[in-house]
Picture 1 (tube, rainbow, N blue to C red):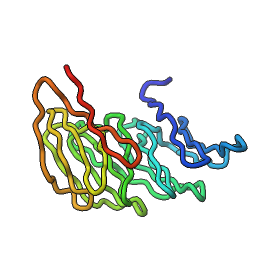
Picture 2 (cartoon, rainbow, N blue to C red):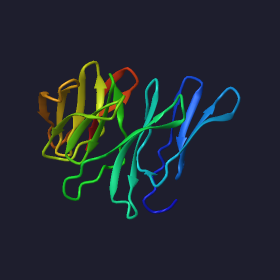
Picture 3 (spheres, rainbow, N blue to C red):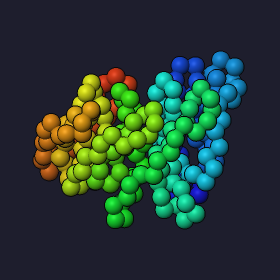
Amino acid sequence: LALGWFDPGSVSYGAWIYTAERTRVLGWELARGEIGFEVALEGLLPVAPLALDDSSLYLVARAGSAGTRDELVALDRGRSALRWRRPLPRRGSEQPTGQGPVVSAGLVLFAAGTDLWAFDAERGGRRWVMRHFAPLAWPSVHGGTVAVLGDDGTLSAIDLDTGRVHWSYATSDEHALAPRHWPGTARLGVTHY
């Protein structure tokens, strides 16, 4: 694989499985083994795992001739077409860390550097941003609460609708909580160092 390329893996939904290649996103209808979804990425290189909901696929891709700008991209699954794309804000030299978006309740969440961003899934408009003082890990959603862990060991519970912090907990030096997402649940795994 070429430098800068990230294998986004694949995601499945019902009778479909989707994956991203360097220049396109493909979807196979599993029963027939045929490609029924294909969208050219045109100047974009996927840099994080795919996410999906009932109508769209979402991915983070690097754009620009030097690969210096990251964008959140939504693809319409029904029409095999680009729905929208939005530049991801950058602060200083911070870039997304290979973590993909998470989709829940009509929002697309993405942790970029020290910020957690929420975008409207339908149109791509920014709904809110939560700023933290340390880089953030992949968010996990349960009900109306987003759990996110900072590199400093602080676990925060954030209101999904508003982006306001409900509470934060500073983990000890000996343990770190890592939010993990399974469809319909949020689980916190404990890792001992």
